Image: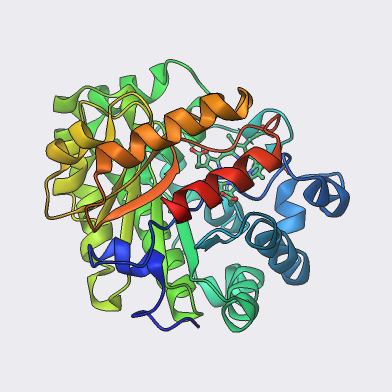
Length: 341
Ligand code: CP3
């Protein structure tokens, strides 16, 4: 475990002055790294996640390579639903796929509470190992109810989230029961990760940006708030992230996190004013920019640092995950630049 008063990442999450702007990258473990491709093996990521030693190694790889200020547990947002037997797999190149999607209130019977120590002992074990080995804080995470619900209802990745939106409007009681069950899973999983040594948590509502602000406020925000409230006593920074959330940033802040993640669509200073000065912000370099030559990446990185203006409470990150074609050397240079700015 890292002393909370000394880790730049934890200081920034609390909006306290830090010796440098901390930086980490969503999906920092993954196919962009040759050492990841060498160790990951083939087969579903869910099989890899069952092996604590491998998980610890894949979590550590980007910390060694990039010198980032935080590690994020190598896992996936569908691990809890898979562990309670909903029938989910993660197909390489596609993402989560559900054999029998959630279609009606009868499917609620296929969900049950998560007992992390029994259902996902491999996750708890990996977090324990990492907490004792790491020199930077470990971020635990979970998928937010809307985003996980979308995978369960659509049966896989979706552009329109049409069935999900239809269900939320047509059958509110089924919707709330589903979201409540998924919120309980996220909460149980996050609490167990913190108990095992995670020093911050991130709730990924990756696809929330598909919703209007009104629908988000009425049909998603209340359960999200319940998750953040349910973590308050643990006293670890809570990060809330989604993509395409420019119109939702104020509402996402109202849900009660300490830090709000921002994608590249809104300049970080504008985003910060929507979120409120009483929260920290995380972001927001466009991952696609990292495929351009270094001088372009440097200009865009400096732009973000200038917009944040050195105010305490900025955690540098990408606006979404590292793209597999990214040259790791570019990300190494981003870390160096952010640290020396
Ligand atoms: O380094 C890290 O960020 C930690 C690991 C991590 C993974 N998934 C590993 C992974 C995290 C935080 C996630 C969360 C996750 N999973 C999200 C939320 C974050 C986001 O990107 O918005 C979502 C939507 C998922 C669902 C999911 N799992 C997708 C869309 C994919 C990609 C499918 C593909 O192959 O392109 C996965 C698989 C997955 N999860 C990989 C990794 C490293 C892909 C590579 C592999 O199978 O080895």
